[in-house]
Length: 64
Image (cartoon, rainbow, N blue to C red; front, side, top):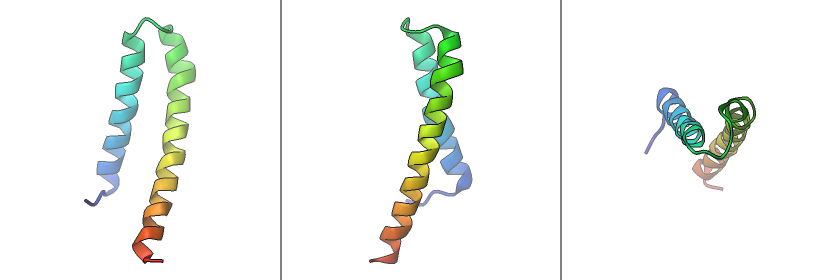
């Protein structure tokens, strides 16, 4: 399965949006806390893991 930029961006945004909406719907934290603290940290963590995943995929594709 190949992912191009629009597909990867859509999947990334969908996963983050589902997590944020789920946390807003749950009565655990206030909406302000979720939007100001949790959502940015989810985005940063997602970008870091996406970068690691891309580099690992490149490594695997070279056949080393």
